Image 1 (spheres, rainbow, N blue to C red):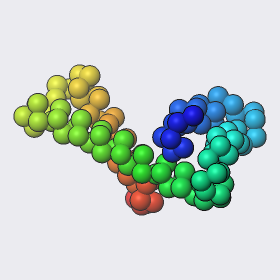
Image 2: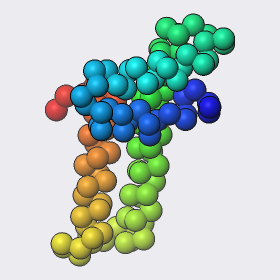
Image 3: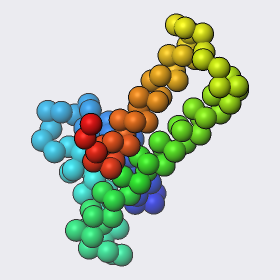
Length: 110
């Protein structure tokens, strides 16, 4: 058992990905996990908090990635990386990922 909002992420992600034949696998596993914490809060409240924390964890990951992108750009002295290099590819992918996650997080539509 871990902190209710930090521990089960990997398990729940993999459940949704690798157990598609089980109806609502992620939801069922989440609820089973949170059940142990109902001595502190009702299950409905734990679900609300869990969903809220999920969004903030994504934002935290994006901010860490943004720091990584900024560090690489600083290391390059803001020069354009070599075309078709791993650095160019990685920067493009990370920047695309950052934009996509931020759009989804803030529910923006382009």
